[in-house]
Image (cartoon, rainbow, N blue to C red; front, side):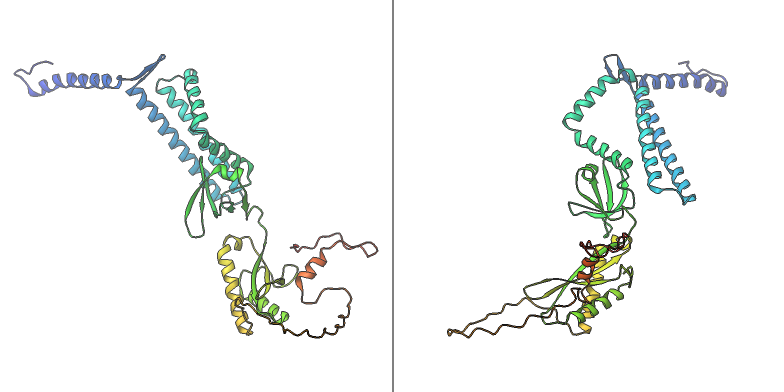
Amino acid sequence: MTALGSGDPLTQVRAVVPHTWEDGVRQFNEWMNVTLLHMSGVKVTVGSLLAAVLVLVLFLLLSSVTRRLLRRYVERHDSLNLSSVYTVERLTHYVLLLVGVLMALNASGIPIAKFTVFAGALGVGLGFGLQAIFNNFVSGLILLFDRSLKVGDFVELASGVHGNVREIRIRATLITTNDDIDILVPNSEFVTGRVVNWTLREAARRLKVPFGVAYGTDKELVKKAALEAAVAVPFTLAQDGPRAPQVWLTGFGDSSLDFELVVWLDAEATRRTGSVNAAYNWALHTALEKYDIEIPFPQRDLHVRSWTRAPAPAPRNPAPKGDGGPDRGNDAARDVTNHMKPSAGTAPRSSEPDPGVAR
């Protein structure tokens, strides 16, 4: 460095600055050329590593901007299929991420032609410890292409997890329950396990709400109370027609007559299964109390027979046979009869199926 002498200070500063700048650039270049890895003809320096990080960040920013533009495009065009747009968005992100990784490797000093060594090591890693991650990644791609599961669906897994699908990620799918709890489920569970997709078809669903009453209660009165309860719940799909509420006598319990209130719901109501059941139970309890219908408690009856043999009871007269049709109030019998195939010798029925669903 040139020593400072007497003279004009400005001239002295102009003489020193170029030398200081050159020294700083030279030191920076020396630091950037520090070798971090030198193996099999591959040399990675600090500078090449920083360049690789910069390239990868640029591709991540490009992916983020692209996805944001796609979302804005969807917001302006309501006729687009959201599931298809989401699939394109995720695939675009994966492609840009893959290209970014390859470009970053090339910028770091690892030629793509020599990447076979690292690919072999990656294959060994997949065979030992990364097979679960790779399995979930492939399962995520299957979900995106198969379209049996899409964002916004309400699903129920064999493990008991149920909620709305919010996002299908590389490793796991994000599900939000009705209690606003986020659960990450591995993608492979959707491919290999049993999944109930309540909204795969945007159609109505049938719900059966069980309840019991005491023995001796009039069936017609129970039916009247249960139908009033169905009308009181706002999300009952229809009040009349083939999807009108029905009341079925399903069994004879130890202490109660077992009934089911059968109602049809729209696709949106099926997303809140817990609330829907609670609403119908509330309405049923209110209706049963209105008509003084007893909800039984568990009970046991003890019958003691006399030690003396009682005379045999007189045989009862058999009940007269009717026309063979079901009771007017027995919805379950009528529902089954309407779906039975006509026997030989009877008039053929219409080929159009009844819009109701048999049990």
